[in-house]
Each structure stands twice: as C-alpha cells, then as structure tokens.
Image 1: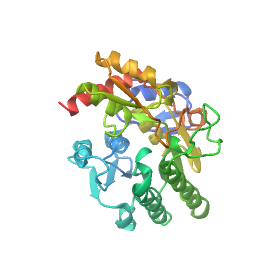
Image 2: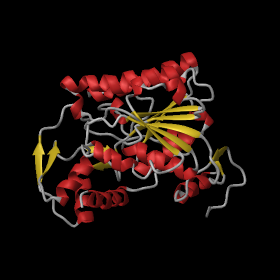
Image 3: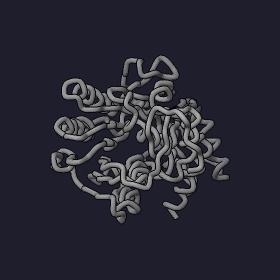
Length: 356
C-alpha cells in the first residue's frame, strides 16, 4: 500500500485495494496496523446483500480477500432486477455464495457454521411507505427477522461480531443538533419504530447471551446503487427524463448526507474494533445541508434546470437531522471522506449508465 504503517498502533486492519484514502486518514490518527490483504481473512455473512449498502459492503469484503455468504430475499419493494444488477459482479466470484430466501425460514445453524462476522443490513426500508397496511412488512422484516437471526447467533460458536444496520430515523425530530447517541430516541415514523425495536432486541441478546453486537445508525446514505424510492435517485432520474420533481415540504429541511463508501468503511471498523461491542454509533457525512442547496448542487453537476413542485410535508419525515459522530471518530476511527458534491457526481454517473 502507498502509505507507510505507523510505528505504534492499537488495532489490526486490512482494507481492500482502492481504499488508500481511508488508510491514510487512520494512519494519521495512529490507530491501526496495516496488513496485506492477499490472504483470505474470514467467512462473513451479509444480509440484504443485493441492496444498496449491502452490495457495496460485499464488494469491499471480497476485494479484501474474505469469503462472503450473501443473503437476500429479492422481494418486490422495488424492482428485483435492480437488485440483480447490484450483485451481478458478485455471483461470478469463487468466494461469494448467494443464498436466496426469507431470513425467518433459512437454516441458520448451518449457515452460521464457521462464520466470524454477520453484517445485518437487510431491512424493510422507507419512511413514507411504513404507514397503513404495509406496516406488517416492517414488523416481519425488521423486527421478527432480526429476532430469528439473533436467536441463531447466540448459539453460533466462533461468531466474533454482529453488526446491525440501524438508522437516524430512531431519533425523529431530535431537539439537539447535531444529535449524539445519548439523546433518547423518539421515532416519528412506523419505520423508525421497527428499527428501534430491532436495535433493542440486539441489546437484549447482547446482555443476556453475550451476542457481540454493534449497531450503526446511518444518516441518509446516498451514492451509486441507491434505491429508486430515495430522494437523490428520484431527483436525478427526473432530471435525466426532463420531468417535474416533487418536493415534500418547503425545501428548507436539512439532512446529514453520508456517502456509501463511508458507511461501508464504518462497517469494516465496527467488525474489528474491540471497544465497539455493545455500543451504538452515529454514522454521518460530517455536515448538515439544506435540501434547497442540494438541489442547486445537482443542477450544477448535471448542467440541467429543475422543475420543482412543492407538496405537503410527508408524515414521518423528520424536519432536520445532523449526526454527532464524535463517538464513532474516537472509538472506530471513523472519518467521513467523501464530500456531498463529489458523492453526488458519482451517483449522477451511475444514474446515467443505469437508465441509458
């Protein structure tokens, strides 16, 4: 690797090629010893592997030399063909095994044999869609599925870490910005309720059975492979097709946007840092941005003018979010690397290729 290892360090870490920027940031912090990624490191399970973050995480693990068992149901919350595209580069690799099925129905005792790390990324996503009759999908896929997996994990010999993908939606309309992990969660959407319930299950299984759980609360992750129901994907697609863009609210709401490679880096750290067990971490992009400013940046990137249509604020949407990532920085060595303009430019390139 390009960066020389520090002379004194606390943690051993192996990162895939192409992640030199992350290596440099953490070498500067003096936290890690860098090792070669040429040998297989571990057998790892990634649930929701065909999804947005899960597929990127599996990519990174395979490049690092790990063996990955990817789990996905390929449900129809959005077009399963998009999910197939997400894993197209994975399925041809010798160290990747794809298991298709419902988490609640799989033989977990067999799947977990020899597994060292579980990244539980699978979830029923979407704030606005979590109201009404569809709520049952959220309880089944977010709460019940997590409990089934935790129940199996407590009996899994050799399991070293269970990383749970949580969300900033657990905070709701937090009174303190940026929001630290010590702020009591107050979800304002059914989706947020189910993710918080699953997070609490993680702590119960950690406290009662010693499951080595770490939880990451993602703040608005974006980038290539972003779900088609997410704002940036919808905005870029509308620009590409010269359609009117619907904005919920007045456009002055703010978000902490996190590029997908930063979320992946946080997952890699959460699985190896000893002090992460039993802890929850905010994973944000490092800045709070007004939506109207984001739209202007997208116009500059695409060199296209937006036609906006403002609608009533959606139920369940928090007005403002901002992550206090000081805990993740201190314990995980987390340092977001990709700024909003750079990340949006990468997503725009992907969107154009996707819909070409």
